[in-house]
Length: 199
Image 1: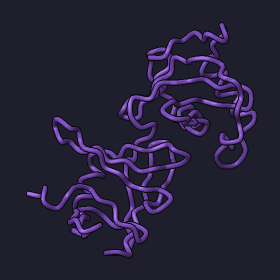
Image 2 (image 1 turned 60 degrees about the horizontal axis):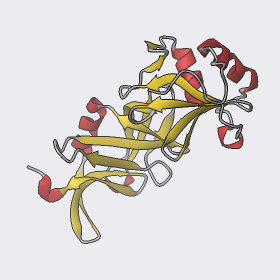
Image 3 (image 1 turned 30 degrees about the vertical axis):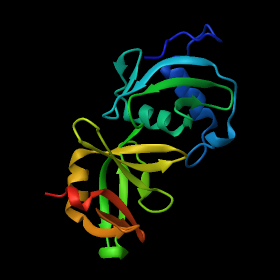
Image 4 (image 1 turned 60 degrees about the vertical axis):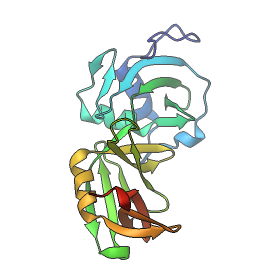
């Protein structure tokens, strides 16, 4: 877990204080975090668990509005994650993906199918070229971990019940001469596993 004290700054903000700073500059929609590049303020003792729970100083943040606010100023640079405002940049810890996709809607069928995912912090992502799906597999257990790109390098881990629904929608398609099992969305096929691995 990241240290609460910063090497650059001996003052660590409170969660409420940081939220107030964001609220003061937030406009409609998502803040333009891609335009905010302040110097690193330090490491913040804030963690996003694999199940999407946010922790501050070891305790879960139970106010959904605050979690949603913090999620709106989340920025990824390489493998690191930061909460940014126009004047502050705090590095935080993320166990897996910063978001969790808890549900999705389906319209159309076959190659015309469209999958629209919803995250636990209110984001919506339509699977397709701009929001690709990917599935990794644990090398030891072979357990799948499915993700969808939400925004600016930030992914959502697709929860188990939603993944089971995806599998139910799956079909076989040949990609680059190899048979795959996967799903269609927005005219793009997203592989889940090689067709030969199906029981």
